[in-house]
Image (cartoon, rainbow, N blue to C red; front, top):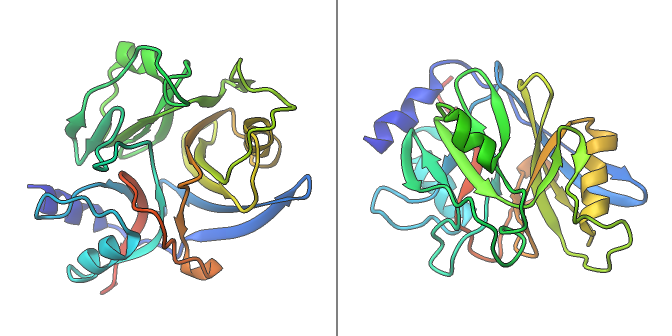
Length: 243
């Protein structure tokens, strides 16, 4: 079932991913942009044997055997030591993990947090309780936190002068829901610096934090292999190699 659903996303051609390094306030960021009418993106967690991919190389090899190329990939949500997602996770319309709506420890539980949702026609970032109320029909969804930007407002606990700095990654979505931006900092940044990049450079009104310290990006056009720590949920831009 899962493999059949994965293959159906290749019905239309996919152009090369648009990844670039950008600098804002003397900090470098790598950004990969996708458009709903041009690109195909999906979430991945387990292989056909039910084991977590863990490394981008495993995903790339697995999909390559099926005639599919990974254009870029990024870790996409927090995970437990066994790589299970901490929060809500949907892959190919199948729910792997329920929504976690209560406050808790760490960045994930720093409410408001949010859910990145992929449908056939839009990308969305929902505040978690809003997601529960609207019950959107997401083909793919991953929950993480904090919600960096919500309707162009910073998360209330993000402080400009914070000394907590890590390599961080996340996703932002354009106001019309047609474009998603996957971003990783190339230097250690605090939440305020990271969020400001989404607001000031990408001009998005909604952005969601994926993770820090274990943040990884596979982007061959930028010379990035994404090797290192094993990760749980992944988001990837994909295309059939026989097109």
